[in-house]
Image (cartoon, rainbow, N blue to C red; front, side):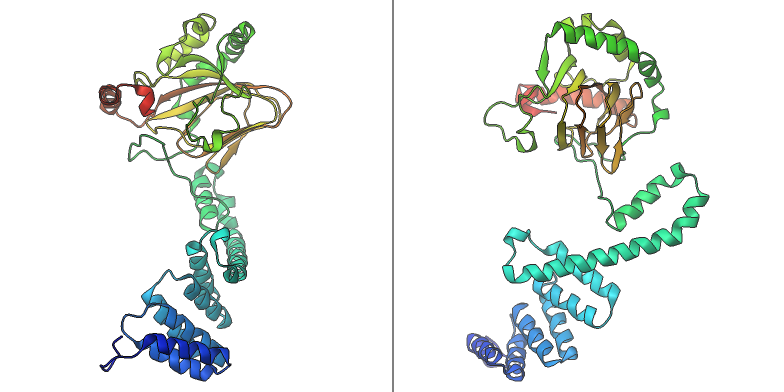
Length: 397
């Protein structure tokens, strides 16, 4: 390996000499040796890290800082170098910089089961330090902003309040993550403003009639199917527990764009209301409408939908206490007869912690921000996909 002034130096011999000096307690000798090794061309971050450790043992803060800077220059994501940087900054009482460095270390650290045992204590310290810092930062922001929140209408600053929660780590950032089809430019909104959907008034007013029609279909016990029904050999991930289970089941009125004539005949008022809703048209895929039945003590795991070109509507019909629904960072309780519209491509989950059945009418609609030409093209796209794959179900959109 080339030396800075020309000639060659035996890097392995230098490394062995530095490690030997370190182990016998000769930190000054180790520092000198590792400094020579780090100065060689083509060396990575490791010699600089070893130099930093030797300097730390000697109380050489200037040398330690220079060595850490040298390591991070060669690899800004080196976990050990980031931890060394954070601990030095903490000793220097540079709180904000230390918090940033600990945060960077946590960001690049592998899962705990893949982390070297020698580093686990350091990562635990990094996590604790960052949590304390974030808690102090959150408390400070809450105190300073409290008068501003008091002077503003809650609805006007709800988005800003959530942005603060995300920034300080109290909540996660959730984006639209459709499994199959994504339309750019559609703002991901967990629960859409109710006033955008005036046609939902008719559904809410007809709650009693819709529930009666549900009971008529359920009493016939025809076509009540598991909501999740994957064939053998398909990776199930979070759906393994509910696959082919009646704990979460459905009575389909319209399934993948096809009307269930038997069920529809028993639900004339519900079908008339659905016909007036802006349901998406994708032959073999949409529209869809069903009664969703969630058994007692059952949880639907967090998941995302297939396409942000359409939204999902819930009209609660039978909602015992202990039932809830989360989309992104927003958690709502169902209230019988009060509908909502949400973007199911944002992570969402539902639960029934009661001892009774929960029933919700579910159907899909076009995303209201799509233009008429865009809707026409999405409808045409469904046919184009089918002409390529031959089977809408095999594509999944």
